Amino acid sequence: MIRDVRADHYVIPLPTALSDSTHGTIRGFELVTVRLRDDDGVEGVGYTYTVGAGGAAVHALLARDLAPVIAGRDAGRIEELWQAMWWALHYGGRGGAQVLAISAVDVALWDLRARRHGVPLWRLLGGFDPRVPCYAGGIDLDFTVDALLKQTDENLARGFRAIKMKVGRPSLRDDVERVRAMRAHLGDDLPLMVDANMRWSVDDAIRAARGLAPFAPVWLEEPTIPDDVPGHARIVREGGLPIAAGENLRSLYEFRQLIAAGGVTFPEPDVTNCGGVTVFMKVCHLAEAFNLPVTSHGAHDITVHLLAAAPNRSYLEAHGFGLDRFIADPLRLEDGRAIAPDRPGHGIEFDWKALDAVRA
Image (cartoon, rainbow, N blue to C red):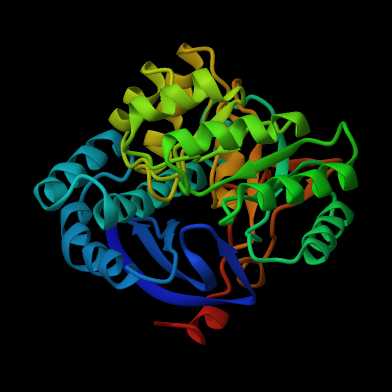
């Protein structure tokens, strides 16, 4: 039984300000954690995050609304608990802060289950391959070209063998020239992804995809708003590039609509906002049924386990959210692949004392 539920809220400053086409300059992230403890003293940890705003709402939902729903219940009945949380918060919103809060609890429940069994999460979820192809996700729209290439060289030196860069500047010509410079720097064979962060209209996205196609990106990510499912289908059909999307989808049903419409080539759930491990794995299986490769967004220390359990995985995104300095054993790379750890659970051990210094 779940005997203790603790939620905490932190503000994680970034060493270097980052930028993309919709969030502008990003100086920090809000981290919201949840810790669950059962009768035997076994603890499971989950987290979610926001980009500079909204963390207090997620924390309040966890502490005031979800803690009473799950306290005293069987931690092993994760599907039952997920449904209880979903319907407890359903009327107040089927997405947004509500599903971020559910996601954090769900991650903690799966961590607790794996720890009780003494196995890493990726094995508990079925176990496919612990060596997951991985790319470095740059948040670098406003970097100069020199700074962009310097960041890339640093990521290559760290062991990455695939790179993602931001596009969506006011001038498409500027985007094209930056991608041209990156492709020349990387050579023809190293995988390159580009991410527009929902910047364009559908017609602009089609023009951009055609303009970027000569540089052979693995995918164009989030070319337009996530709500425009028919528009995504047009971009896939007419743009000439594979499309990654899904980090702003908040339910299994939204993924079903986008996938069934032919609006995505690489479904891209984020475990911290799609509904947790439970929903992330359902998205993987849904994508597999449509013969689609799945990728991920954010939370790479958790997500490496999930993609290690998915035979249709493509690339894990390694994101610069600034959490590494608060984690005992950050993500490990070998020859361009992230290695899912063999520690019980998801294996993330936060430095809680260090986090106290950035408590919200």
